[in-house]
Amino acid sequence: MDFVILSLVMLAIGIYGLLTNRQLLKVFISVELIATAATLNFVMLATGQGLGQAFLILAFSTDTAVSAVILALLVIVARKYGTSDIGKIVQLMQQKGETEVEEQ
Amino acid sequence: MIPFVVEILSVGLIVSAVLALFLDEVVYAVAALSGTFLFTAIIYALNGSVFAAIFQFAVSVGTLSILFLSGEMLGDKPTKKTSSNRVLALIAGGVALSLPAIFLSISGVSGATSDISFGDALWGTRGMDVIFQALVILTVAMGIAIVLYQKKKVAS
Image 1: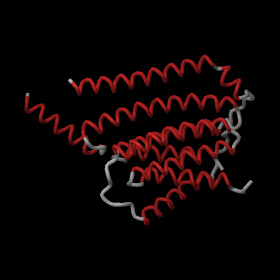
Image 2: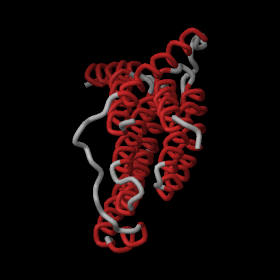
Image 3: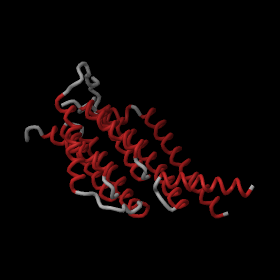
Image 4: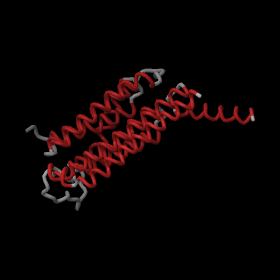
């Protein structure tokens, strides 16, 4: 059993999801998976030792802050455009940009 | 102890991660993500990192509750339900992806060697801890400032 390969697989799944998913919440889930892969690698390379676990707490606090900011941005975007689909949001942004140019 | 329990947990970890990404319904995807967090916490605990397991569990409970709420509020309803064949295919894919971690190994990778206890590591490295915590608080403050600025902009 090799936890480095396990965390690499998790990282690959997360990056694939980040690149291919169109739902904002799925993108957030992908970020969580990437963070989990990083912390898994971190802890398992220092199994049972205090240092690895202590630094994991720092990683968790950073991860939580990142999650809070991502969720805040997600709520703003979803409320502004009425959808959480990235493709639709881009379309709406382009339409809005064209309307603004026509108005000018 | 049950034999191959860590291997079984690793398969569960990857399968739940795959399901979390590729299930169409956001609520089901979040439920699968809870499985990912739970398996991770159990793997930590079984490998002697009990504090890490507790923190993983505590942080993931908070994240999941927020994700469930935002999934219900913001998630677009899918036009069709995920078929059972697709779910089975996703599970099979997850099992296949977890096989390299079970059967392969990277030679030459060794763990960090340090005999510092958890308490010493946590409280003895407070300098770095304080700097990182300050960065985290600054990031959160910036995020809140952005949200408030956007709200003010929309209101005016």
